[in-house]
Length: 549
Image 1: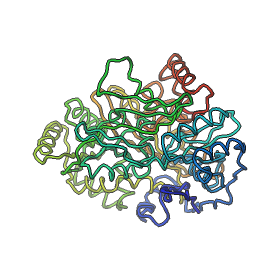
Image 2: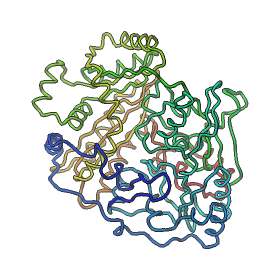
Image 3: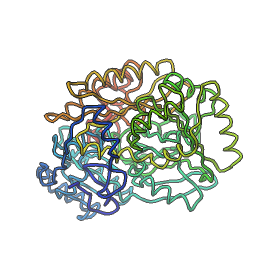
Image 4: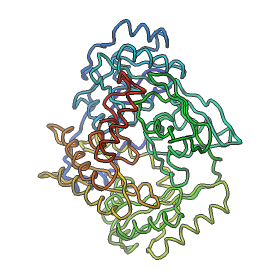
C-alpha cells in the first residue's frame, strides 16, 4: 500500500501518489479511458502498487554521536530513524519519484528525519550537522517534481531530512502595513485559515496548494495560478529568516531599498542550498468578496496566444488567465467529463472552430464595481480575436477542479500511463517556436511502434514581454525501464528549451535541471552561486546536488 508519514500533522502525506486512499477524483470515466487507449495505443493492464516491505531500505548510517547531539536539540522522539519514517520523506512527487515508490527504480532514502519545533532549533540542527559533515535536506510538503528534496549525500557519510512540519505558526500580522510573518512549515491551506480571521489572504494558489508550504514557495520561487493579480511568490516576500551553517541571517526591513543588491532575492529561489528558511514575511491582501470565472474558446493557437499577449501588454489580464492549446483542450474535455466522440463533434460544430483553444479567465476582488470594470476592460481587449464565451459554468468547473490533475495522474499511473509535466517561459517573439520545439522533442523521443504520445500545452502565466508554457505528456509506459523512458524524453525537451527560453519558470532547478543551468546563467553566474554557497555553507552540507551544478 502507499506509505503515509505517521507523525503529527502530515498523516495525509502519501508517497506513492498524490491521492489518499478513498479520496475523490482519482478515477477516469470509462469514455475517457476508451479515448486514451485509442489515442495512445494503451493496452488493458493494471499496475499494482508495491508494498512498502518490497522497497529496499538500508540501515541508517547516521553516527550515534551525531544522533545523540541532534536528540539533545529536538528531543529523542524527534530524531526518526525507522524504516517507515525515512521512506515517508524519500523524494518528492515527480513521476519518477512515484515510480520508485511503486517499486520501479532505486530510492534515495535518508538516514534520519529530524523534526525541530522552532527557528532556534533549526539553527542548532544545522550547526550540528555542519560540524559533523552530515548532509541536510530541508523538507516542507515534499511536492518537488525536479528532485529538489532527494536525499543526496553528496559524498558525506550520512544525510538527514530536516522536516519543517512543526514550524506551523502565524507569528504576527501587521494589518496597517498588510504584512504577515509565517513560519516555513505552514501548509498553504492552513496559511489561508490562519490569515482569514484577520481579513487577509495570501492569494497564492499553485497546483501544489493542497500540500506545499510557505518555505517551499519561497525556496523555489513559486508562481500561483492567479499570479497576474497577486504576483509571483517572490513578489510577495518582504523578509526572510534563514538558518545557515554560519549563523542566522535575517533580511528585509523596508518595502524598497537602494542599499545594494536585494539579498532577499538571493535567498528566495535558493532551494535549501544556502540554508533553511524558517520564517517568511509576506505581503497579504484583503480577502476577496466577489469572484467571477468564465470560459472562452478561440480558434487556433496563434490567435489564442495573440489574444493573451494583447491582454498582457494592455495591462488588462484577468487574475487567472490560462490558454490551452487544441490538444490540451481535447484532453481536458475527454478526461474531465468523459465526452463521447459524437458529443465532442457537436461541440466543435457548435462553436465553429476547427482548432479550439480553451481560455479560462478569472477575476477576484473586494468590490463588485471594480471587478465589473476590470472584466469589461479585459473583454474589450479580446474583441477582434473571435473569442466565443462559453459562460461561467465552464470557468467555475475549472476553478473547482483545478487540483484534480495530480489525482488523475495517480489513476493514470495505475493503468500503465507515463504521465508527467514540464514547464518553461520565453518572450512573445519566440513563444510558438518554443512550443513547437518542445512538442517535437517529446513526440520524437516517446513515439514507438504501437505507442503514440499525447503532448498538451497551455499558457499558465503571462507577462508584458512573454509567457510561460506548461506541458503535460501522456504515453503508454514501457515495461522494461519506465524511468529511462521519461528521463530521455525530459532530456530532449530540456535541450530544446535551452536556446529558446528558461529551463524552469516555477518548478525550480533541483537535481533534474542543474545540468542546464549553466547554459542559462553562464559560467560566471555559476561561479557566483558557488561563491555565495561557499561563504554561507563552507562544508557543503546544505541540500547537496541541487541548484548549483
